[in-house]
Length: 185
Length: 67
Image 1 (cartoon, rainbow over the protein chains, first blue to last red):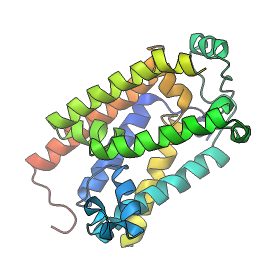
Image 2 (image 1 turned 90 degrees about the vertical axis):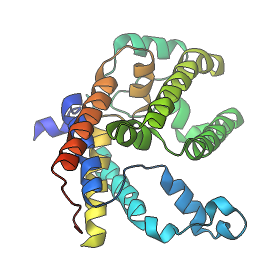
Image 3 (image 1 turned 120 degrees about the vertical axis):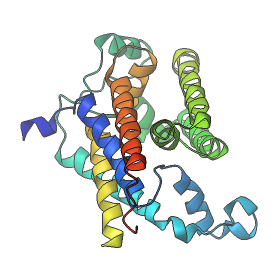
């Protein structure tokens, strides 16, 4: 039991993520989380005004259920399967983050500097999160997929467009982590 | 049952993503700093499992559950 509470090794986690994708293929579906953003927009009735949202979102309801399940799973894992030893990242990374004023994990998944409740007192932080949300929403639809759809499902089914998208994600992430984040903090 | 299987798959997915810490801001930052193999390992094993699995499904021509 003890082992369930510690950080799961990459070879176990990677295999399970692959199996989750394969089980959805077995159910006759595809694997990808961000297409739900389009479904959620279409649910509001936007389809009457914007052609992009005018599609049969009810056929995509299964995917919303996957997300619902993932949220429940995340809740259970955080509240009942966590341990202070979690997120044991490289000490060099922690030093680098401390220099930028970002707190060490100590078992948390997300830094307080970016996601704690008191960020609502900082217009700068609110703006950063809103811009981030807009970029994720726009970018995943513009690229027709996010990390789950392109990197895991797309690369597994040997799709060239997915390889291009993943290279793009990676370059974007590198620029953000190395150059833009130090400018913001 | 039709509804439940998607929720169950999602539930497992949520637990794996959380317990592997793939959802952690710290893990993602650490990956982009090239200071850990953890995230690269997860992604590579997931893709390898997927490639092998999809090939097996194709070769054996396994039909999805509706045939």
